[in-house]
Image (cartoon, rainbow, N blue to C red; front, side, top):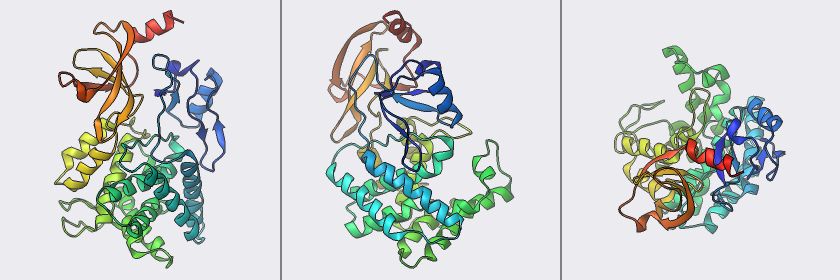
Length: 366
């Protein structure tokens, strides 16, 4: 299984992971062959990429941090929560609580493993899936610093609702490809305070959960918003969710740019560690999240091409890889090894797809 951009390279490939619409219904089920009609339909709905069965390394299984059932329920919850907030109805505290319990239960089963966030989303579904991913990643980071269950629960609930205030911001500003005027940017920044106000209007939600919405854009050097808080003034909940929010936003396809590879997103967070983001939390992110998720196509320092085939416990930057092409990009019998076992090799770059010569050989081989 690997991810591929929707287009000619997806035609004729077998879909490896079912695609769901936000309310939980299946849009396209795993196992179907992607015809031009399916590809056009997915593109029309705003999808940019899909998971396909890999031709060179069959049987790859990308394991999400949480189960498919939990993710579908959580995404459907976010649809309902945003609709309730838009229409001035009460947020369903019990339902939010149950979903976070599911997330915590799934992560407890996989404690100590290297995690991946593998959800697909269309442009229109960004806000729903993003909120779920931010909740999952926030809880992972909370676990990594040994937060207790009660705090993890409040953190997860706040992170699920962290962007609720965006319902009060004109959608055109949130989706614009170009820059914003100072006045428009002030409107966008107001979503943090608006989200806090919405959550605080529901007394069954904790004050700490509400502060996640308020503080997730604050930064250590005071450059964040809405209050320009600095190191020592930002709650741990805000620091954690801020990192989770930036990471998932970076790896997501947006109307104004394609998503970054996880390795690139982590590097950007590393560059901001100590000035924008808490250094210890960035380090914990690097220790718990896969730098090169399963299915990543890697250009190695000896000019060979490899595919990440599985993660190694406590070695997020050193997956087991299968080298599939020699330095001339001629296909070879896949050779597997852990990157930690080859100190002479390192990853030059994660590639968006197989190099052209590899794809030509795949076509020639039928």
